[in-house]
Figure 1: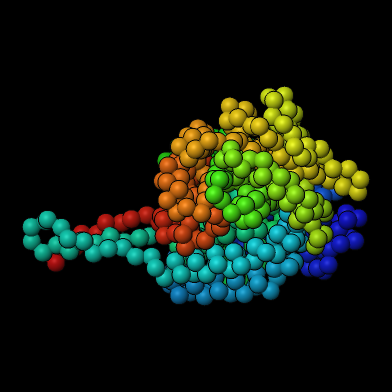
Figure 2: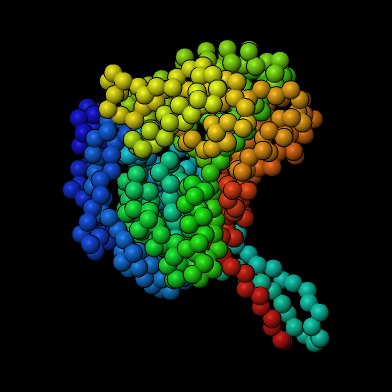
Length: 499
């Protein structure tokens, strides 16, 4: 463990977990080393020090995990009733509730999110588990009319597809894994999870807790390793029936290509460059912090971050003044510091990427109003960057068109609502977006006009699994949440019965 962890980690369970020599794969309910015997390291973004060693799984390990998942799918697991699966989800929810502090400390040290933010995410996790528990008892087909002569009854059934490959990003694996695991347990599928090599630890620890709750062996398997090896092998595996992936558009393309081996159905949440539109009549007391945290939350490492903040020209100066004042209230610090509101970015390459985009913004003529530097002092060894704001940005600039995935906010002035909608739509992405206005007519005009998968009105970032969210254009397809989410884990069987 790093010096930082020894000083600040309070959970003995978290410390014991992190003290393991190697964090092995989880296949068929057992912790096993990679067949190659190779390992890779994961780093604490707050300190730049090695946090743990992970088994470096590859195609051979993916293959044995898929075999275990297929065997479990065809075994006793398929006989579990919806009530039994609901009861399992309830036991899991209880254990996660009891262990949540341990889990957020592991997550904070592994991917850098402040514990204050992670602690506040607990209600969202509990809602997700409740939602998928309800879905287990609501999988239903239909009784249908038909035009066949004679006495023929017709209906449809919904059935689990089989083995689901889940590729999990590094920007929030503790909660994010349950978009896959929750649906797998509700539907009766099985899964092989491939977490990011940057942040695998909370997924491994949660999988152990799932088995404590009574999860049958082989239903949830975890293969850690590099994306180009384990991730690609999972996407291309001919005995994996579906893939759920969250990550970059570039990686999404490679997964689509790999999935053609057996024409897998995919659920893809990819990149974004969302527009957050602040109209002249907006309540700035709400719009300023809402738009700011729509970018700076999780240090900008959220796919639907509203990094293009479109502000109506008459209030640009006032909005900017209030935004910079709000930024003075943000504290960047170690992930286990309860007082920190923002943590580091995930890695040195990500830090370099963010700083390079700040250089690009300056070179393109945007005005850097705040931030733009790597933080030094006691934070100098971590991957900390100041939250940054550019003014005078146009939609042709790279900082307004390309996903930075860091705490960089661009202010783009607009004159009228039609122009704002046009600017918002002038993007290859379509994941999120928002409008701030006290006029319902204006708000709905923007909601209907912007081509994106999710829109917020006078708020930013609310997600509820009963409602769901998803993307369009290069931001992917397939819903997360809502009844449509389960369609990725089920197939429809048509039945004809001559009586």
